[in-house]
Amino acid sequence: MNLNALWAYANPKKFIQTTEKVLPWVSVLAVVSLIVGLVWGFFFTPDDYRQGSTVKIIYLHVPSALMAINVWLMMLVTSLIWIVRRHHVSALAARAAAPIGAVMTVIALATGAIWGQPMWGTWWAWDPRLTSFLILFLFYLGYMALWEAIDNDDTAADLTSILCLVGSVFALLSRYAVNFWNQGLHQGASLSLDKEENVADVFWYPLLVCIAGFVLLFIALVLLRTRTEIRARRMRALLARERMG
Amino acid sequence: MIALLIRDLRLAMRAGGGFGLGLAFFLIVVTLVPFGVGPQSDLLARIASGILWLGALLSCLLSLDRILALDWEDGSLDLLATAPLPMEAIVTIKALAHWLTTGLPLVLAAPVFGLLLSLPAPGYMPLVVSLLLGTPALSVIGTFGAALTVGLKRGGLLLSLLVLPLYVPILIFGAEMARRGVDGLDYTTPLLMLAGITCGTIALLPFASAAVLKVNLR
Amino acid sequence: MMPDLGKYADAVLSSYAVSLVLLMVLVWLSVRRSKRIKAQLQDIEMKVKRNG
Image (cartoon, rainbow over all chains, first blue to last red; front, side, top):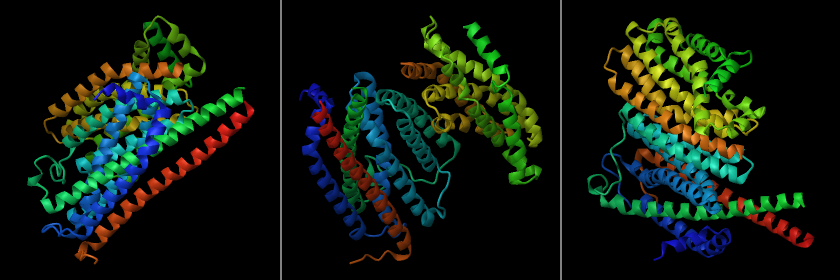
C-alpha cells in the first residue's frame, strides 16, 4: 500500500467526504461492541474469588484508563504532523480529541475511586497511578484552555502542539517521579501480553470487546468532532471575509 | 546579552517591577500555615520542608506573567526579535533575570523562614541545595508558560493552569530531597534526579519557548 | 436476569452509572455541537452565495 495516499485525507474536503461514509459504520460498530462487551461483562461473568462482584468494574476502568493515555498519544502524533507538515485537519483532530481524553480520564478516576473504596478501604490514595492520572487530567485541562483562549486558529494550533510536546515530556517525567515518591497499592500491569498471569480468560474476552468498543467509540467521536471543527473553522473564515468585504 | 540582562534586572528592581513581591508572598504563606494547621512545633517541623517548597513554587508563579508582558505591551519584544540575538538567547536571559530577582532571593530567605516553621537542624542544608537546584528550572518553565500566554489579555489564570502541571516533577524531587534531609536519610538519588531535570530543562526548554514566542510575534 | 452482586452492588452499579452518564453526555454534546455548527455553516454559505 502506498502510504503517501494517506496524506490525501489531510485535505479538509476529502476528509469530510470520506468520513461522511465511514462515520455511520464506525458509530454502529462502536455501539454494538460496547453493548456486547458491557452486557457480557456485567451479566455473564462470574465473580472473582477475592474481589467479589467489584471485578465487573474492570470493563469500564481498564478501557477508559487505556484510552486516557492513548488519546494523549494520538494528540502528540497529530500535533507533530501539524508542526512538520502543517495539515489543518491534523491540528483540528488534536483539538477534537482533547475533551474525549479528559472524559476518559475522569471515568478512569471515578471508577477507580469507586472500586478502591471496597477493595483498599479508601476512595483516594496518593498511589502513583492515581496521582499520574490526576496530573494527566490537569494537562488535558490546560491544553483545552489554551485552545479556547486564542482567537487565531493557526496561532492556537501552533501553540497547543508545542504545549502538547513539552507536556508529554513532563507527563512522562511526572510518571516516574511519582513512582519514586510513593509506592503504590495498584497491582502491576493488569493488561500485558503475558495476560495469563493476571486476568483469567472469563474476564479477558469481554474485556477485549469492551476495549474495542471504547476504541471505536473514540474513533467515531473524533471523526465527528473533527468534522465539527473543520466546519467551525470554515465558518470563521467566511465570517471574517464577510466583514472585510 | 549582558546589556539585556542588566536592563531586565534594573526594570525588575524598579518600583512596580515586582521585586520583593515574591518574597513578601513567601513570607505570608509561611505565616499563614501555622494558622491553618495549628502552632504545635512538632507538626510544623514535619511539614516545614514541604511548605517551604510549595511557598517558593507559588511565589515564583506569582511573578511569571511579568517576565514578558511588559516588553510585549510596549513593543520592545518586537525590537528584540529583530535584534541579531537569537530568540533562544533572549528567552534564556529573561529566565535568568527572573531567577535572579525571584528564585535567588527565595533560596536565600528559605533558611530564615525555616526557622519560623521550626525546621529541624539537619534539614537546612538539603533544603537550600534543593531550592538552589530547583528554582532555575521553575523560572525556565515559567518563561515557557509566559511565552505561551503573552498575547492574551487575561493570561494570568491560564498561565498557572499551564505551568503548574509542568512543575510537578521538580516539586516531587525537590521536596523529597528536603524531606529526606530532615529525616536524616541519604538524599543522593533525589539530588541527582533534580539536578538532571533542571539541566535538561535549561538546555532544551528555551528552544520551545523561543518557538512559541516567534509564533506569538508573527 | 439481574446478577447477584452481593454486598458490592452499590459500587458496581454506581460505577456503571457514572461512566455511562459521562459517555452519554460527551456523545450528546458532540452531536449537538456538530448539528448546530453544520446548520450555521449552511446559513452563512447561503448568505455568501447570495451576496457574491
